Amino acid sequence: MRTRRLVAVVLAVALASFVDPAMAHASGLGSQDAGDAPFWFVMVTGGGVVGGSFLFATLLTDHEAIRMVNAWRLRVPVDGRLRRAVVALAGLASVAALAGILYVAFAGPANGQSNAAVLVVWAGWWAGYTISVYLLADTWPLVDPWRRIAGLLPRFDRRYPERFGSWPAVAGLLGLVWLEVVSPVSENPRLLGVVVAGYTVVTLAGAVVFGPDAWFGHVDPIAHAFRFFGRIAPVQRTDDGLAVGLPASTLAHPSEPARDETAFIVALLWATTYDGLVSTGPWALAAEFLVGVGVPPLLLYLGLLVTGYALFRFVYRVASARARESAESLVSPGYVARWFAPALLPIAAGYHVAHFLGYFLQLSEQLLRTVSAPLTTTTISLVSLPGWFSSLQLVFVVAGHLFAIWVAHALSFELFPGRLQPIRSQYPFTFVMIFYTMTSMWIIAQPYTPPPYV
Amino acid sequence: MTATTDTTDSESEKRSGPTFEVPVPETDASGVEDSVPCPYCDRPFRRERLRDLHVGEVHPAECTDEEYAAYETALDDEKDDLFTFHMQIVVTLGLLFFVFVFSYMGVVTLL
Ligand SMILES: [Zn+2]
Image: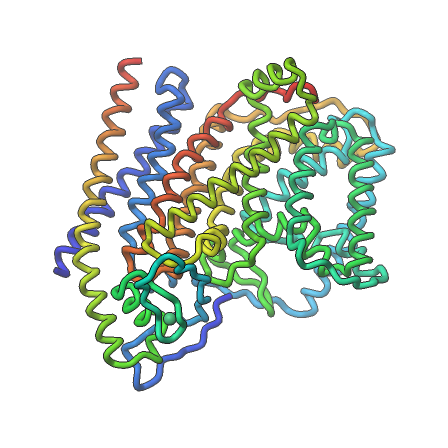
């Protein structure tokens, strides 16, 4: 019995370790040399790697070992005085940065490409900084300028209506993404200044009325997005310092899932997809057609945003209900959805890095140039990326899904008894993920087409 | 972030369970008449074997010797099913690999 199992495992490990690099190699080759393998084949291979990795994960059924891998931590105590000094300095720097962004947005060059505020917000912060949050650590509470300023303001601590949950954050996130797509806020420094100033006023007013904890805990979409992205990060904060673990391992720790977390996590996932989808050629064609038959453009983009979000939620809910059935469990479908929602975060991060790393690197030199001379007009200089970079983007998309499979695998062992039931619970999720991988790869590989009418 | 509280005592030395509080999930057994509840946390299960597995995994320190024996039996039964399942997985992985390698070769030479 024991030897039979051992042989099976050794065989499986040998095969699977052979499968994955070979697949990655195939997909790398395929997109590098056009004409070598068609893109649809690369896409199917991506789906195959995700499906194959799930099959491989089913061979790892030692619950103790899974727990040990995810619970591994290197603790780094940080001296209290050092900690307080860093907190104080970071606070000052972040508030100064916000003031600087506002000043340069209005007083700097009117051309977005040479305005430091535009580059700092989009390339530096939303692309580069966000990547650091999920790849390294959630430093946002340290450098959130609004929270720092709110801490100094008076507060009325009006009771936050609990029934709203985190829905304001969901609406805020989708609203910001919509604004970014339909308005020239990512190119026009003056408009960016107005948006940042407006966001500052609303955030500070909300924090004064409801208290910073309620506001940043339920409403502020930026704080929410970084809190969730930060849970993927290998470096986590502890009471007396830092703890370094494996990437995404914090997500695998079983804890009572909050009711409204799922809504925001799904919004985060959809927001990244939406951002990519509207800059593809097929969307441009569809938009031209729909605007041609009389749909107002702004409404069209809002409609896609809301419909897509509803569709994502629907698919996730159906998959969760199916997971309950395939696992022969009596856990409620809603609880299954909440339980596995953290596993969606690495997918969102993988897509974000695929979408924004190239953007950040291309603009990195321009970012430095404008920041060092914020009030002078400079010519744009883009860092050119090597040809294989587009293949790397596809690898990021697939990698996000692989982390998701691992997290969901670990979580399933904490929710369902035995070893077969947890494995079976993952069939519907894996099925959806294979298609999602292929869709994301398709979006990422489309040549950039400016969204029409906006 | 793991709350490590060692629950091992002399009586249940061999019975190791989770070292952290495992949340009791919300369940919905409506329409299922013959569900089997866990005697410790009331969580219902569709089959006795699943309940036995749960009791041994989540409540190893509190459960009776009979319940622990039932857990070990359930674990043993599952082992056989798991082996069959793993053999199928290994075969599927192998097939998947060859299908991709051959179609890759086919795609590259044909197109
Ligand atoms: Zn129980």
